[in-house]
Every structure is written in structure tokens, then in C-alpha cells.
Length: 300
Image (cartoon, rainbow, N blue to C red; front, top):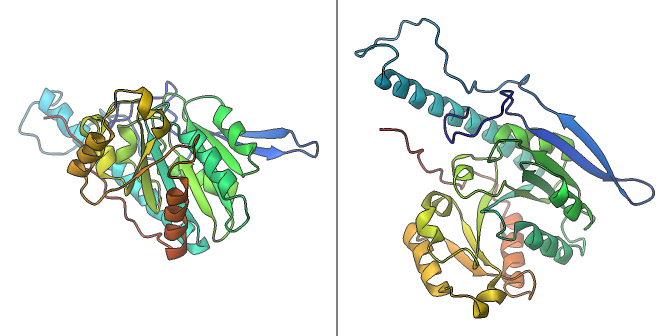
């Protein structure tokens, strides 16, 4: 079990399943799947109950002892992930690839926005690639592949977020072009992805207007760790009881430096500003760590 978020794989494997969608001569998708079990180097996600010489001022096996081990486990998992994220960042930096980590709850419109974004960037001015994260299915990867963009799907199984080791393997499989833009579509979840740096240049949070304007207050860690907030599906605002100004105010209350764009992949509203922001980050070569990771909430 993951000591940070509680997600687990029944077999104990944390690597996920990696699938590369390529195109056959007939133009139909061809799928290459790689199973990754726990045979790679990673932080162990279980508590060891062997004898040790650590000093205790409480009885071994007590609640305090279990809490101490939980805290140590959480630090080990995040520390190991940050080490691999730094390796990813160096890999990307060496190739001039600018990576964006797209995070949102389920159904916020990440894939639809990506489809519209890739279509708009299809003029050849900058190559793009995509890493898709989902617990199961290749549905989103197939949608991205239909745009002509290279894509690798990571299926996390019971896991609720992408981790740096998964992205590292996907990078080696995908081999994004030098100077390109890489979009990482994280698993739909507004909680755990906030803790896990993937090596991205920037984190983009997406909140749909169908979710309620108080989302930034309910899920502050994800908003605090982002550099850009996209309020998606704004074409639906006239049909909803949604206070868009209040949502933006809540987001800035959590993260005063956050940039916010109102966007609709359907109507095209905000797309020009979104594309300008992407190109600005890519042109600046922003590949140093800019994501401020919130401290994990530990059990008292």
C-alpha cells in the first residue's frame, strides 16, 4: 500500500503498464504493451517488521511506533520520487523538451482540451508528444493518436496518480523530439498528483465549471502547486449555477501568483491565450523545477 495516499496494487507492483500506440501501414493503430512489475528499483511500499536497533521510548508495535514508521515511509516514497523526477528533468532539459503536467478531477475535459490543442499546434511550428495516465483502458491514448501525435499510455491499475519512475520509462519509450512540447495527462484525481513531481517544467490544473466554484478551497494542494489554472467548459456557464468570479477569487486566495485562463475546447474561447502561454514557456526553455510541492499531511 502506498504510505502517502493509500492506493495499492494487489500484487505490490508500482510500475504500471506501458503501452505505445503506433500506426501501421494501413493507418490503423498498432499497440505495443509492456508489463512493468516491481522488478525495477523503487522505494518499498510496505512496512518491514524485522528487528532493528532504533531507539524507542514507546512499546514496539504501539500506535506511536506505527505512526513513526508511516512518517518514515511517506518521506522515503516522496524522496525517492523526487530523485527520479530530477533525473527526468535533466533528461528533458538535455533535449530541450518542455513538459507540462495536466492535473484535474475526472471529467474536467483534459483529453478534449488536448485534442483541440494538438489540432491547433499541427502547423508544424513545434513537435508535440503525449503521455496519457489512466487506471485502465487505452481510450484516451487512441483519441490522441487519432490527431497524429505520438503517445504512450500508462495504466496505473489501482494507483491513483502518475509517479516519476513511470514517466521516466514512458520518456524512453516515446523519445520526444528535441525542442518539442510534452503533455503529461495525469490520472483524474485532485488529491495525490499534487504530491508527486514528475520532472515537468510547469503544472497546469484544470477545473471544469460543472464541478462547483469551491473546488480550489476543497483541494488547495493541487491549486497551490500549479502555475496555471484553466477553467474549462466555460461555454456552459450560461446553463449552470456557477459563479466564475468566485471560483477565480478562491483560487487566488490559495495561490496568489496563479495565472487563470477561461477556456472552452468546444467554442474556442481562451484557446489563443492558452497556446500563447504554452509557446512562451517552451520558447523560454523553462525546465528548472518550478513546482512547489506541498508538504504531505501526516497522521497526528
